[in-house]
Length: 176
Image 1 (cartoon, rainbow, N blue to C red):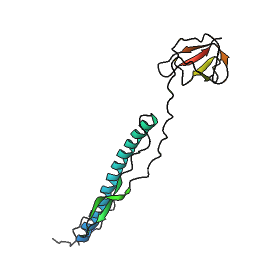
Image 2 (tube, helix red, strand yellow):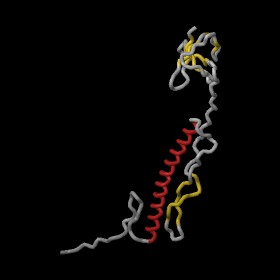
Image 3 (tube, one colour):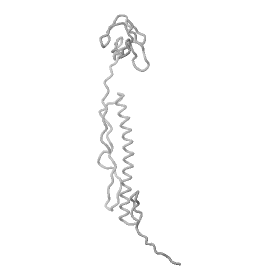
Image 4 (cartoon, rainbow, N blue to C red):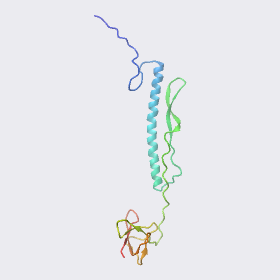
């Protein structure tokens, strides 16, 4: 019976992960650098997702007129890697923001409150001949008909009847 001697040596780093499993100080330091880089990338992906969701919620509140756009949430700092004095790497919070500040939405226009007893016929709705929008200061109830001719915002004069709508201010129909 014969035996064949097969040399065993360091096969080198794994071609997919880049990690070298053979024990040596240099390999351990290199592996810690790769692991720290991967850890920082995972943290950054998570932090960026949380920040963008929070910014989107803040932006929706600004657009809805609930809050001012004066104080947007600032991007958090990104994770990075550092090499310690022992040559091993770790993930730490860096000094640069994770992303640029997204576009800040404009504050919506200040709503005009209805004026009690005001009939405000807006402009004609294109393609719907007798129908008109309701002006911002209008406070007439649904079903109200003007007793005398009034002039709409775009200069049409006539008798108008208001149709209320549960979502919004309704419409006016020119009836005379």
